[in-house]
Amino acid sequence: MKITVNDNGAIKVEGEFTVLDGAGNELETKDAAWLCRCGGSNNKPFCDGSHKSNGFQSEVRAQA
Ligand code: FES
Image (cartoon, rainbow, N blue to C red; front, side):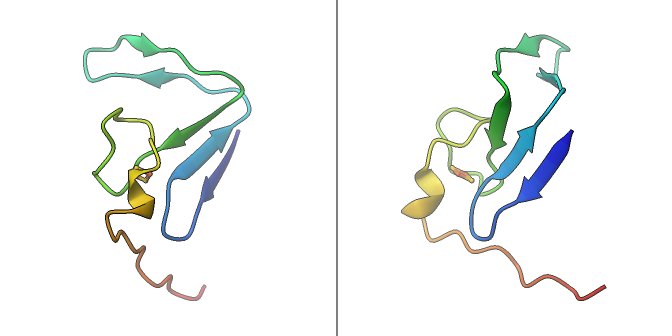
């Protein structure tokens, strides 16, 4: 599995993974999923592109 935290946008998950809702039900995904982290998606937990218009900006990452 590979997880990419995109600047000012969604978290991309690819590889072998399963997304479950809070009740433990599996949500349909394909080879990759983009998870919303801005809170503005109308299709949570998935990104619907709303971050592009709602002003979401990711925090500056700390240097390792
Ligand atoms: S990160 Fe894309 S809609 Fe929230």
